[in-house]
Length: 265
Image 1 (tube, rainbow, N blue to C red):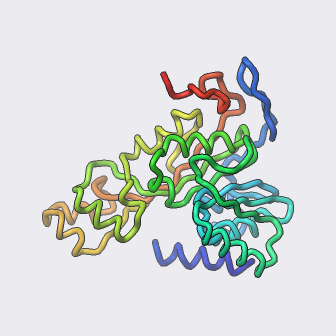
Image 2 (image 1 turned 135 degrees about the vertical axis):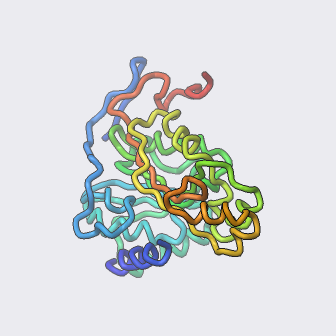
Image 3 (image 1 turned 90 degrees about the vertical axis):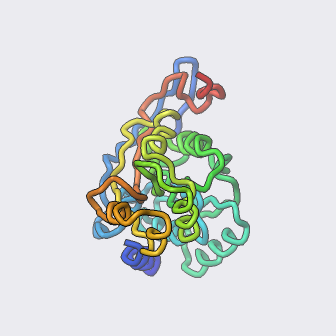
C-alpha cells in the first residue's frame, strides 16, 4: 500500500476502550495519544501524523478510499480503518481498490455520517477531510464523532473557515472550485460544534490561506481587498484548517453521548 501514502504526499504538494454509561456519567479505559506523529511521515498532513500502530480509525466521507488505505498502512495489521461514505459507487470502488492492494485491515460501509453505521466508542481517531462543511446538520456530525470516539480518543477535521464575512459571490465561485468553501463558517462557530458536543482541548493545529484564481478575486473584491486576501499575514480571506479535539476521559450527564437532550439547554 506504499502507493497510497505516495499519492497523499503528491496530492498535498499540489494543493499546498469500551465504556458504560450510568447515572453518574461514563467510565472508561484510558488511551493517551498526546498528538504523536507517525515516524517517517512528517511531510504528511496532520490527520496522518497523529496515527499510530494499532489504532482503530474511522473516516467520515471516505470517497473512493485513498485516505483510508493510506491510514491502514500507518496503523498496521493490528489496527483497523473503517471508511463511511453515502455513495454506493464510492464504496464499491473503494472495496475494489482495497482488494487489489490486499488490504485486510480496512472496511468500507455505506451510510450517512449524520447517523454513522459505527458502534459507540469504537474509534481511537475519527477523521473528516473536506466533508464537514457539506453537511446539512453539522452539529449532528460532531455529535456522531463524539459518540464513535472512545474516551481520550481524537476527532481530526480538516475543512475551510473564515474569520471575517466574505462576499456571497466569492463564496459561490469558490464553491465551484472546492465544494466545501460554500459551507465555510466563522472559525469560532466551526470549533464550537465540537466544544458543544463535549470535546475538550479543541485546537487548530494547521492553518493555510486559500489562494483562489486572480480573476475570481477581482470579480468580487476591490483592488485593496484583493491584496489583503492574498496577503498570508492578513486575517481576511478563506482558510483551510485542521482541528484536533479530544474526548475527555469521563463525561458528564450533560455531554454524555447517551443523553438525547444534550443540546436542549
